[in-house]
Length: 59
Image (cartoon, rainbow, N blue to C red):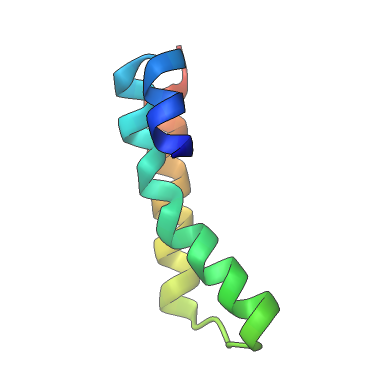
């Protein structure tokens, strides 16, 4: 539902790039709620994803 609202309010390219952050939030919730451990590969992947989203969002 929030995705549909975002598509209506924001440019589609911005929303499409931001959807890549979903796994990052899933991992953070798993760490907080379930006490999961984060591996170095997951950390590296998160940095790459956040970096990619940042690159697409900058003017």
